[in-house]
Length: 97
Image (cartoon, rainbow, N blue to C red; front, side):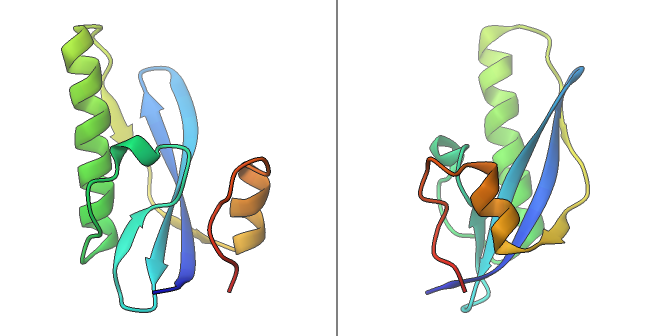
């Protein structure tokens, strides 16, 4: 399976905003790209499924800390692989198309 599309999604944790990147494979499966890799459990049949699973994992971590942080996600935006690579140049961000 090769990654063929990448998506940037804003992650809102109360007043903090960061970006997470998801990808779609040539088999039509979706997962988180990198940076949040400890939240990946499996590939998903839809981008929404991958995003929901990711959000649930991040929220559960905050709930366990009882820190009151609420997690929400913005709308996915398709981005070029170069953006994904530049977002974390020191990490292997997956294979280019």
